[in-house]
Length: 210
Image 1 (cartoon, rainbow, N blue to C red):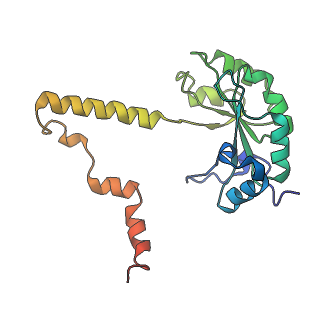
Image 2 (tube, one colour):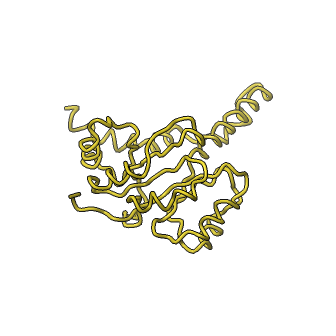
Image 3 (tube, rainbow, N blue to C red):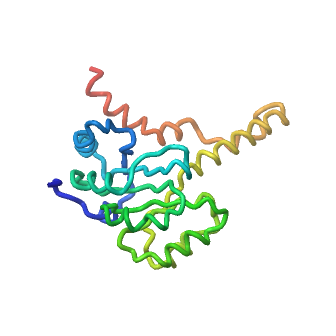
């Protein structure tokens, strides 16, 4: 039997910190039980299970019966990621198989399909959303859907914004023939190091550099 199981994603600590949900797709499937235990012992607070059907995305991976087997040995919650056509038809089987949270997508440019599903969903497993395709689906609108959505993922928005910012800065340098017009837009290098945790790393280094 699983050890000290956490039954729901919503039982995870809610303090602001990085939480690691390693993807089981990167595992050695011939040794999946030990791979799961290794991830848990390494600090994983949940496991990410990528489900692909060969249509929504090119790859073909696993179905509900594998999720059920994973659930029998995992002690942490399972976040099941449905990259499949017609996900609404399969959320129930994956929830019954043991998914503690279900991440679903729609290729529609509007949130109508997702909202329709959430309104009809019985809530036996919380839903995770990535609102990249439908930016008008704000957190206030999601909260109004009955509390069934527990996690919202802003996957690559900061990276994409950073690319646009870099393009704009380079264009301005080229236009102005120098950095004098953009110097005030840049943060000090010290701030970059702080974001990377360099001060804490240097403190920890001291016990080795004697």
